[in-house]
Image (cartoon, rainbow, N blue to C red; front, top):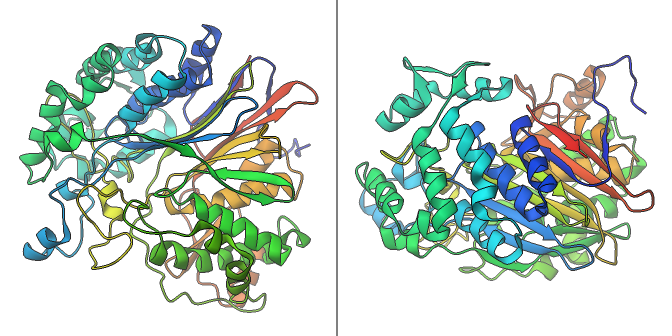
Length: 528
């Protein structure tokens, strides 16, 4: 049990259904859907739609999503709701126009939104309630408004100088040229109309309608290469998960172009190095996490990309020979200097988890990449576009090099843990851009190796090795920080927290659900 004299949260318990999201309005709407007879898929879509309205800095209809759907007793299904580069966006175009980097607010950063297609496709395959019922809550918040929460307000303020540069975004998301503050009420009526049309017309409501024309026109006016055909061609990929065994438990991830394979590789290294021999809150553990991050991100940034354009041998990458080779780069008394430190971007996102009364679980993540994405909005439909295209490389022959119709290497990854019988034990995810793979490793070890409760596992202080620095939270023990510095880590104490996270545990023996929601965000776990 946690020390009650210190700030913290209790775990949330329920018997009939559980939701954990990073915004209370989203959590409440998902519970409403479950109580109306909807299943976990219905509730996850409803929650994501609400967050697309009430958390515009992190997610939206103009973004992408990934999910793992675990129908009780069946093998989990991976859902890839990410979009592609416009078909005209080939490397030759960027070379010819002397563009050597895709800017955060460039129209070339906008890949085709995949979220709405995935929502509708998931609903068609697995949903039980009408889509109009599922999207009603999101439409209501967009039309009638909602109060802006604390963390969201901070993210809003940090991006007001970017939003003001796009006329549509300025009109939609700023008030007197300033961001909306904590407790102020915000509406997006054009978005409510868009949601209403999607609820009635499904995929065509977004990808083959006046909304499509509005999106293409808004981007083309800024120099974007997008066409209506690019939107018509969007598709959602349903597949088996990729998985690896860690201490007799199966960790499930979505296949590429999501980087979930990095989590599997990290956990394989942890097991090979027996990292759980070190205390959960120790210099040794945080040092190992930093070193594992560096050696795995070298792989991520040089080998991985859209599997439709690259041959990736999962078994070889996760094999014993590969893991041993990476382990040899790690030393307990000094640091590894990566030859490939650069990563394309470090965005934000929202993650949510739902488990229903039948123990169906949905691990779901939805994002517009950086804060407020590209900061480009449509003229008439209230949609803010992601800037996921910044993840592409403008390099010849790079596995993540830009090409028309290609999906960029992503950062967002939902996670799921099962036993050998495919019974879900944990539906979990960690937010925080590039932090997510090591963040998942951190939380999984906290639960599996250190026997922490769900909330304790999410709350433990974090560190993240990125681009030559070891970023640490203010809450990390100063003695640990000094020890990390003493062997060569270039430590940087972060102004803000590192990421966030949600998790639901299914305790089948006692017939209860145990949920936690990261205190680093605005959200909550709630059950009934």
